[in-house]
Image (cartoon, rainbow, N blue to C red; front, top):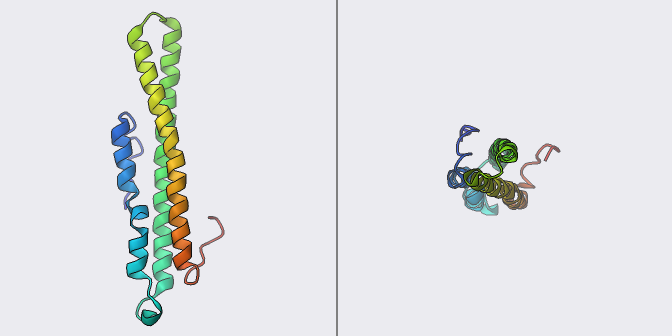
Amino acid sequence: MAAPSSAAGCEDFAEFQELLRVMRTIDDRIVHELNTTIPTASFVGKVDASQTCKALYQSLMEAHTNRERIIKNCIAQTSSVVKTLREEREKAQDDVALLKQLRKEQTKLKLMQSELNVEEVVNDRSWKVFNERCRIHYKPPKSQ
């Protein structure tokens, strides 16, 4: 899967969440993927499980890296907007519209930061399933 643009979806949180939902498809379907591609004992000779597991490992690593990069990029962008709005708020403390915009951006920033926690849970679940099914067929590099 090609990685969507890092800047895509940072302004609108709903768009940001939809982008992550689409990018998490590989994690959502990992059990099905493993069930259909890793052979049971009776079919062990018909499929190269080590190559299948290696390809799945590489796909998972790429997906997890891309999602983390996008989340952190959006957090950085939104943090910058919040910082700018805070500085403007210091200069114009009576500006209600500015305060409203600042609160909106702060809320969006907190929601984006919570997506890092969601990402950790999704990744942990995927690695657990991957390791249960592929540990005898493929040993990933020690970087994980």
